[in-house]
Image 1 (cartoon, rainbow, N blue to C red):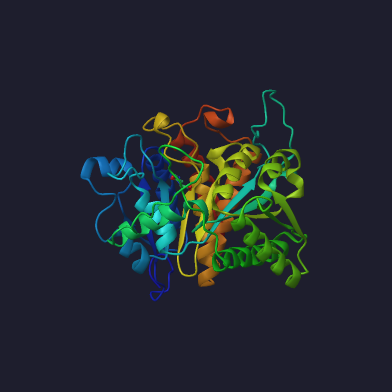
Image 2: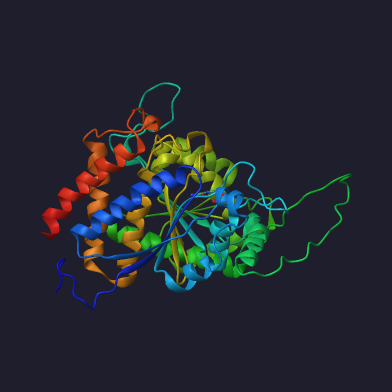
Length: 403
Ligand code: GGG
């Protein structure tokens, strides 16, 4: 045994850390402090590879990330932790977002088909359904997980271009089609939805609901959200959802059109458990749903595939707040918690599972006990002060558990 009581054969988890742009860098600093603490106070070790990337990096260097970064993430990391991507005026010569190669190239190139976005209101957090400063929703009523299809749909052509760039390949040729009835300049994005792509994310949603059922000790429904009254891709998505419903009778299933669903999220969140949606609808619905959990500063996510996983806050780089040390780091820290949980599950690592519980407990108790919060939650604490407050709670719990 070494100093930390780690069996010498125990390998460190290999993490690729991509802070990206703007406030992504600030919230990532808090995540790194937390990782260092867990390394020091628990038997878990990390081997961290820092990869600069994003629109700002592109403006500085002409590249979206250093050569070999995609290959590192694909071949040499156990998990990827991403801050945020996107910077004003950072565009590739073809007009695509600079930095997209990292976030979208990885989602597509590593087949990260399930984008898991929990929407949970912690006791002590004000949701943002206001105008009136009054709590409409009881935290017990807001606890759902949205699962966004992550590799096709309306994002397909951009995802593909970004994957091709990441692999150093040429873009697919652009196919020009005629649109009868439309005059002048036309721009369009195809929205392919495949059986295979739908089956894998819907299967994931059923497995996830079953897992949550066991964990929470109560039934979990799955709601399929689409626009199958209008679009063919959604008709296929819903057809496949119904096939799964037929053969998974232990799970209650519901269906909704995305337009009506946007009302449903805000009016009756207590009726939603697991929700599965095509790519763009999932992107939009989760921003809306974040209002129920206190805003984007609280929204964490996991991008999961057959072999790889990437964790990131749902929010972007917030250029307006960049460099000010004011944004909420919780979405990032909660993404680290999701990473601990997922890595522990895949590696069957009981110690890392304990670390996931500790971080969860630290975040939950911080809000329950009225801990300091950033401006978005009505406080005036800085990013680093909130990060430190969570780290202090973790430290106490780590000492109780491991020393
Ligand atoms: N951390 C999330 C982030 O950086 N988002 C920027 C972005 O462009 N995301 C694309 C998407 O999720 O649709």
